[in-house]
Length: 192
Image (tube, rainbow, N blue to C red; front, side):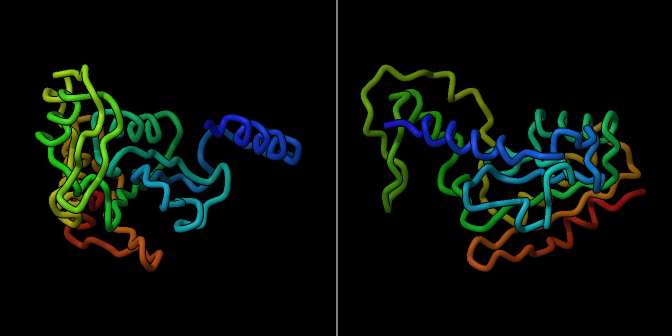
């Protein structure tokens, strides 16, 4: 079963009512960017009050400050004028449920989807797998608050990130929809 037909039908309806959105400017109107998780329960447009054209939203597993995420933030600032950045992780994140060695072992066994059980992930697939997963740093999360701090610090220390950009650190609570500041992260991200 595929969702292809549903996606294409939804796109036709969206395009039919597209209107003036085709003339939105390339730079984000509100001049900020958000780095957040790809989790389907998070809707940055809703929790940050965004409409199309307002901000850059960079998403990956865990909302982590990977090299590619920092690359996107630098482009967002340097070429498109963002002036403030948010790092927003969330409660109950799937990146907390495994370690680098767990995913490396799962991938070595099989490339099929694993199952999360009460005792952790179990591979139900049959090989072949790939040893390549053992050589990737997956940026898993042991402590959500600490991961926000680490990511803000990593961004702040990057040689291509100007010191005048404030970087705010938050956790999104998936049970209440609230953004909760991580003060140590925001302090680390203070503009100089």
